Image (cartoon, rainbow, N blue to C red):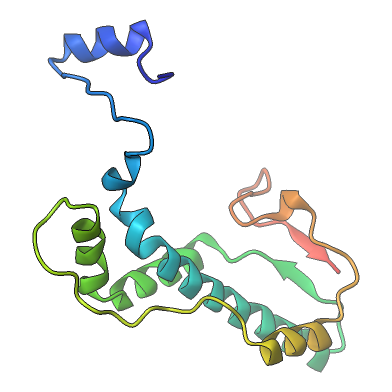
Amino acid sequence: SAHFTEEVVAYADSINVLLERVPPRFTWCCQPADVAWIRPLKAALRANWLVEIRRKVRNSKALKENLKLRGPSRPTMVSWITGVWKDLPGAVILNGFRKCQLIQGAIEECVEVDDALEDSELTDLAENMAIEDTIHPAGEIGLMNADNTAPIYSL
């Protein structure tokens, strides 16, 4: 494994850590987040982002201005993540650990979040946005200008 370089093994030994190899195709049991709650978290964050985009589209149309799409600020993202995490049922998190056999117990039934958009929502977005250009990959959320502000892209 690339993780077991001589340096890594030597350092682990120096801090009295025993490294164990995980057999191929067995890492799923070490990743309860991937098994259970990453999908609903991402779906809820995406829903927040779509609400924000719709708001910006409506505002730009009302003001008869070009749409200036800017990624959410860090405080906004923290607020979204905090809200989504608080709304996530505890059973979803526990089920992730149960499915990975890291804790005992029966898997509880949870309402699964559907992250797919309805056709009407897609049509609404397409009609209301009428964006002919695409967002440059450099404009992805998380990339900041030198002055630590989010870049602005006119569409």
